[in-house]
Amino acid sequence: MRIEVSAVGTAGLVSFRCSAGAGAGVWKSEEPPVAGREYDVEMDVDDDVRPRPGGVAGVRLDGTSVVLGGLWQVTEDGATYLQVAGSPVSVEVADGDTTTDGEVVEVVVDRAAVHLFPYTV
Image (cartoon, rainbow, N blue to C red; front, side, top):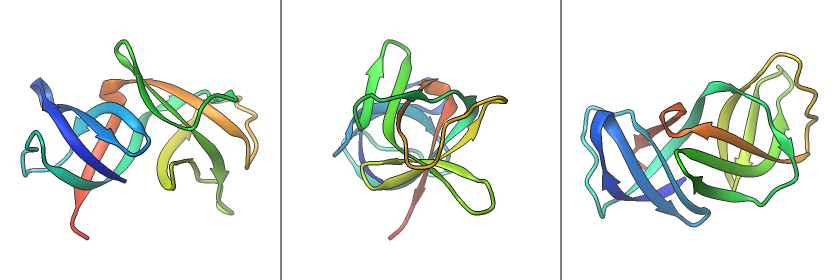
């Protein structure tokens, strides 16, 4: 996912904008982020999630939470991810979840649970 860092906070927390909306997460790189600079990042959620059906595709902030909306995907080996604006976001499912492959869902997580891993294209 291509993001632009809009603000750098404490403990590695950054705010960002992307084509899918605005969000926040923890920067996971030895290279510090620079506000105003664009990065290609891999995003994952380090928390067990409970997707809720429906919602709007994209990324948005809701208080101290990040709302990720998109298409729920399950791989052949059982790995789960959320397809957000064409980018996969790796997620772990909470026990007992019954979300099926191909459903449109929203996931709400704390900003600190969203991890951003920059990479070079």
